Image 1 (tube, rainbow, N blue to C red):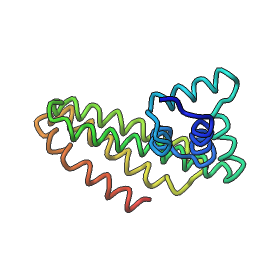
Image 2 (tube, one colour; image 1 turned 90 degrees about the vertical axis):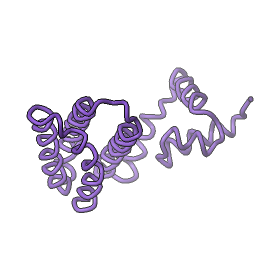
Image 3 (cartoon, rainbow, N blue to C red; image 1 turned 180 degrees about the vertical axis):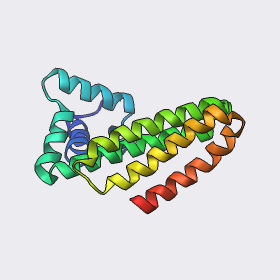
Image 4 (tube, rainbow, N blue to C red; image 1 turned 120 degrees about the vertical axis):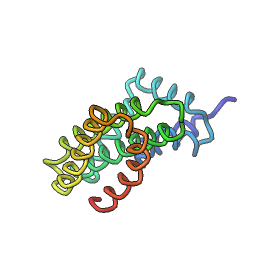
Length: 166
């Protein structure tokens, strides 16, 4: 199905100016994710870098704090998607789930550490997540038989941490 320039322009506007993820923007424009990705790639090939424009718009409009919050929010979206995938796939061995969770917690800590200088309120959340990461490693190394129970408890506990620490 051929889409007009209006659809391309709307996709670009949603992604760049309204900061909607490419996946959601594609849904709103009634196009496939692959089409949206292709259009974005084609625009880049022509010198229209949507990601740079998105970042510049964010900086110009809301400042560096908003950029840090957006990065943290983007990571949290990926974090939740990974948690959903882990919970939806019962075939992943508990030891592997704990390994993935530890890696995810490490990535979270790195993302938070990068934003801490700009967003001091993330410091408490970073500390809480570091404790969770250390606990995941401890369970993986010393109590692998409890890995499944840890995975079951971790998601609701993560939601509680997010509620308490923001």
